[in-house]
Image (cartoon, rainbow, N blue to C red; front, side, top):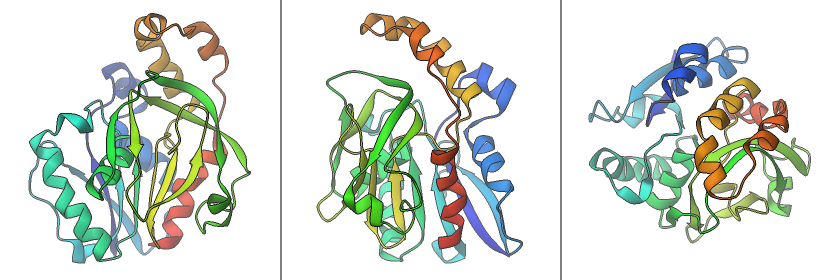
Length: 238
């Protein structure tokens, strides 16, 4: 049975973990309904276990979000970069999410850092580029779709040779493709509306500090089934 590896790069807020599960659990819940019989999910906590699994035994890789910052260059995070480069060279299917998105872009020659406009949190509209509309993973999405977002850092410069698949008014790089089966997204396809609301409640003070209205953001949280469908469709490429 082939393994799809979930690379855990951090922990969700304790109240989110208690009510809905940690980052890896959110991925597992979204994927479980579409997991073919020949695949199984395995979790590797990259923060706590520095030994990277051998790429030869992996059918695909999913990289979670984190409350860490890529620009802090923590040793565990930096150690992932050569492993990700080897996975790209090996044409191992990959999908990075939020921190995973920023880490992949940074590993492949881009730049991830704090966004000058501040934090983007809540349910927001994301738009496909022309390349995104033709991409094998993204082409089944509508040109505009809703997605859950919570991030202070962004991919500020995409790696040379990558393709921008989606963007919005806050972020020029909402989705990138690096190779035939290697993608990353800034938004959270694993989040439910309940998880997004829990994040906004925790971030109220920070959002107020940057001039946002948390109550409005909470009222605008909706289900994002189209964005979530990316996780399940990714399985077709492993």
